[in-house]
Amino acid sequence: MKQVFKRPDCLVDIPFHFCPGCHHGIIHRVVAEVLDEFNLREKAIIAASVGCSVFMYDYFDMDVIEAPHGRAAAVATGVKRARPDNFVFTYQGDGDLAAIGTAEIIHAANRSEKVTVFFVNNTIYGMTGGQMAPTTMIGQLSTTTPRGRDPQEAGHPIHMAELLATLAGTAYSARVAVNNVKNLMKAKKATKQAVRAQLDKKGLGFVEYLSTCPTNWKMTPEKANRRIAEELIPIFPLGVFKEEQAPAEAGVG
Amino acid sequence: MPVTAIEPKGKVTFREDRCKGCGLCVMACPRKLIIVSSRLNNEGYHVAELVDPDRCNGCALCAEMCPDVVIEVWR
View (spheres, rainbow over the protein chains, first blue to last red):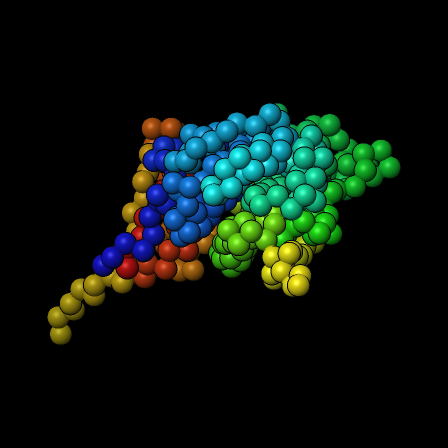
């Protein structure tokens, strides 16, 4: 018998600090497997975010710059422009990318920065204890919306994948989930496309992963996993929202 | 007629010290061969285990769903 599944080389052999059943671990592994596949370990530079994903620098066997909260896309811009031959990516949560870092990601995408952005949306602030995030669904309970998110008072959930797909500089934008193996395979495919968008110099590659937060959703991992299909996907539909076929400059002349 | 043991098609190993007992592998196994056992690891989590290794065909769906890369698969 030969080994068909093992820990990706990009992941350092230490335990994750994530709560039991948190999808961050799965998404870390998906990203690591894809980077292994493209043989990018020696070339990759990560702009890490703030949030539950903050310990990227421990888990990924790569060079990492810890960006100030929300500014990973801006830090990645600088790294990529200074070292265009390296593969540069960010891995950010919804509190990081969709709240404090909204300006950075929108303008990085609009400038068509050749970076890849992995965005984990669990509809809540995980690390700080379950406050409402911009992605929190209408009626969803959080510590700052104890009676559920009221759109009159707290606005609507923000759809980053669709929003970035409207910008000319975005080469690839998709939303995926990892709640079952079928969706996970699609997530791997989307991750590869987002990596290719940078390698082919097409523009910014963006993947939004729907994730659970069993601790702050106050659910068992199993129930939290079911919630993805039952509650999150109807509000955050899965799919590819933009896929640039050729470089933006192509076709000129 | 003597029954000869059939070589199992797959083999999975669980790195129990890393398991957090979340049960996502239990949900993923198409043959329902995995349970969260009553045994505890050093972290105090109930660990997942394979109950019927002979029926495992090494599809690796459990390993795909494991958030802590506990499972390794041979086929």
